[in-house]
Length: 278
Image: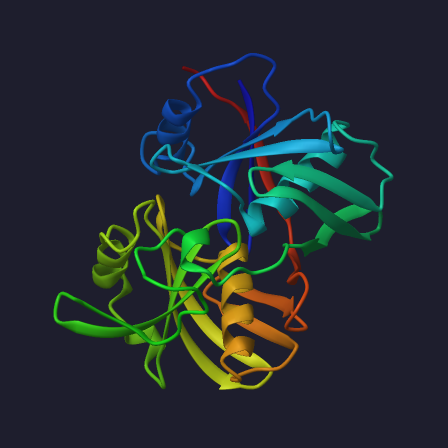
């Protein structure tokens, strides 16, 4: 199979335009292995669609399929444009995902796609949308949860996939994400598991955040996580309508007016093309 490695702020995936069906969870696990495979946070497929310009399927490194991927969708559109899967001169591309159709505005430099602004859809705060085993309607803020002796206060949000967000006043780089992340992800509170974010608010226009991604572990960036953080932070009155989110892999720009969709702007980078031998 011909494969392409791409990343958005270091959140890296292997991309395919398959012509036949395979056991994609198994392929995802094998290509994602950083010692015996290509090495990635997962696998993303560029597919035809009956309702949009194209369709995206996204599999985490453990083979589980996710509803949406913010960094991945920017890259899969760049991939589709460059591979001729959609007309290469399009300025706007609609992508079918498990969380509905997402619209991307394309940015080019010297004719090369370098970034995109994504309509990530409306954030949802009802626990049923995550889902989470919490009684009553949302929004849920400062939900107490103790794991391995650490007391957390979670804000819950869905961007088509679930997010549990914990705020710290300082020391975000020292937060034991590798220990706490998997415990939150697999907690009985979240029947379909969850992404976990730790966030430090720098000022009303700037946050810093690290993420444990459901099914992949610690990643350098996550577009849906950044979107959830932007919405949760504004909901809590900590930030305004537009923020820069500094992740370990770089910065994303997020916009949310408190009512409509979250918009995310960030880069898309093609790393290499190769042949995968099974």
